[in-house]
Image (cartoon, rainbow over all chains, first blue to last red; front, top):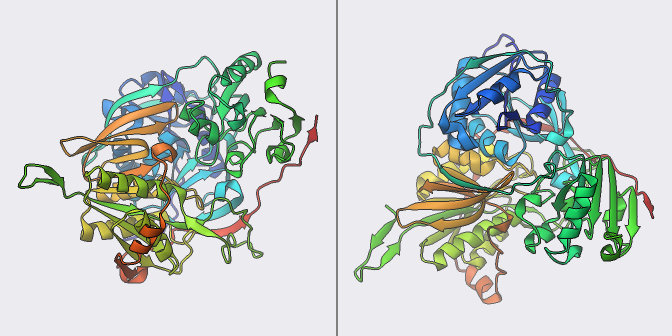
Length: 317
Length: 251
């Protein structure tokens, strides 16, 4: 395999998440990371059958230089096999120095596959950019931070949305160009259906305030108290793994090492002990508060304000 | 073709399942960073099977119990003690093991791309119909290996699996965790599935099964002899403590 000796111009591709014409918050964070990586042009890729509005919105993001719109139903639901094949085609055509996705279930599904096809070792969940080849990422449930320096010709990364400022959604004026790629060469998985929980509450991943319940809530019915409280506070509702495993709330509310990572301005942990794996998902919140009747619970160690009391008395009050 | 009809016209599966099991620092251990900040301290620290790998093994065993699978092979890449992790999988019900030995650090030197290439090599020899890996290992928290392996093999992938069902037509239906809820996908075999937390509750190995496991076969090969490029693609230049929060006031 031959390697170019001459220095290649920087150029970053950000793979966008989008829904109903809106670009995802994670993508705005990835654009910020892209700008920190180098001074080369930032291209945002928007793929799907009904993504023209999202592509236009991508062009308005401050700092974006180009938008590629791959209009094809095979990219709907971000089917990993197809999106990966598209990334390979685009990389062959445009030789990006960096490809960025969001460290969400969506991005984590296809980015590593694309990296393998490009014979690259991706670096996932970066929380900081040190230089064009060096990044920081959490390991061991965020109990350590690893600084890693990549030698790959193309650096493929996923970006932790809570770790970077969101680029302004207005101010940019990038042109949208149509793009296409090869279809996946092998058999692909087939999307059948989504079961999305619709809610009027803010999205957990990007909410400014979060109220989270743990095993101490004792039942799913008791979470009603938290939903009411959250509505008063304009907050999203989350949960510990224990509460999800006990069936109190659905999966997508789980905050933690292997669930969602959040960093709201205010995090209120109710009846939640604060296991290490849970802390991994919320310890970057600006203000952490808790209500717990056990003064020894680890959650008090990370809380700015802790209320020692019975949640069943304190919350309704 | 993974199913054959035997003499009594019963559908008997010949499906082979490969499961990866990784030896990692036990989830309950409070980790310490080495004095030279080169890595996390793992000497004299309690090690266990990665929790997501336990779930992967459990799912494979259930497939055997349901007669959807005939043979479950547990694979581990790691130091000589990784054989204990394989023995745990055998005690849970796996049929045999493959131990690829290496003294490279499995939390930062042997990287997911290399692991995927090793699995691809083993797949060439073993020809499984299904590979189940844990979604991520709790040491490097990469969440990449399954996806990368599927890419190298050009197989369909179903990641973050919450429920796995077999169709009669040699396809699988997988309910998987997505950002806003759950998603159902179907895929033809062979395929790679990665196990998420709620796929199942792994069983404890019983003492009789632990004893039986000692007789099961474990093949050993050196990573260096596999003819796979396992050169690290990134170097860890420093491992440091995250910023600490000061404990606040109790109201």
